[in-house]
Amino acid sequence: MSQIRILAVAAGRGGTGKTTLAFAVADALRRLDPAADVALVDLDPQAGLTGYAKLPPAADPLNDPPVDTHGLPFYRGGRTLAHATDQQLARHLERALDGRDDRVLVLDMAPALTDAAHRVVFARPDVMLLGAIKTDPGSFQSLNELVAYVSRRGLPYVLVPTIHRSVLLNNTMLLTMRQQHEGHVSDVVVPLDGKAAECVVAGQPVTMYAKRSKAAKAIFALVEELFGSAVPATAER
Ligand SMILES: Nc1ncnc2c1ncn2[C@@H]1O[C@H](COP(=O)(O)OP(=O)(O)OP(=O)(O)O)[C@@H](O)[C@H]1O
Ligand SMILES: [Mg+2]
Image (cartoon, rainbow, N blue to C red; front, side, top):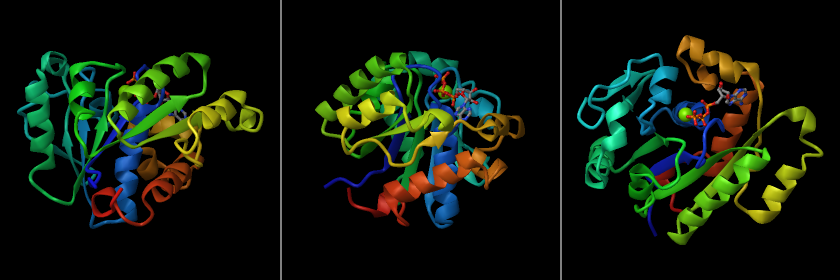
């Protein structure tokens, strides 16, 4: 059995909360286990996560050294990622793992489905997909394609819905998703919460910016639901 070394936050499409989730999950993993070795990798040429951390994009993301973001090593994104070869991306992941057996990478993936980064990441045996999903009809097709892609490779995946609480109870999309992907939708639902949007002004994940906000509490609960008290690299899948 492979250990999970990489949490790839993806959705196959844009604007589903991938970057917000990736930043907060990485931070929450560290807060729940201060000894955990967690690193962030922005694999999006648009460098959304890099911007959320209030950092400039990397001129050469595949070679520039990591920077520190709130105590986490952070491999920034940048435009030239769009032209990276499979081999270069594979090397980049190994560089970020840094030969450390206990390191876990949290990847923020671009809004794409079958680009080189998705190909390379999901070719590895030690990856878990965290699917960031907003429950609107447009999300479903790309999500289903992404899930098919990932499950064909036998990889674990968990779909994390972000949803407005007031429509939670009768949200048929959420029910449908739970039926279609039984056992693969997190119990935790991330609420739409102004704090989760506002935190980028401070360059912080919501779990740091507003620890007691509904969104932050949900992310902490999600990490506990997924990994218990053990970080992924120390837990067998
Ligand atoms: N839980 C939440 N509550 C409120 N707003 C949120 C939440 N999660 C994300 N958002 C907002 O939704 C928008 C999209 O979020 P985010 O940038 O994380 O998505 P993305 O999937 O990474 O987008 P892209 O595909 O463009 O990279 C942002 O304005 C963000 O602040
Ligand atoms: Mg993004």
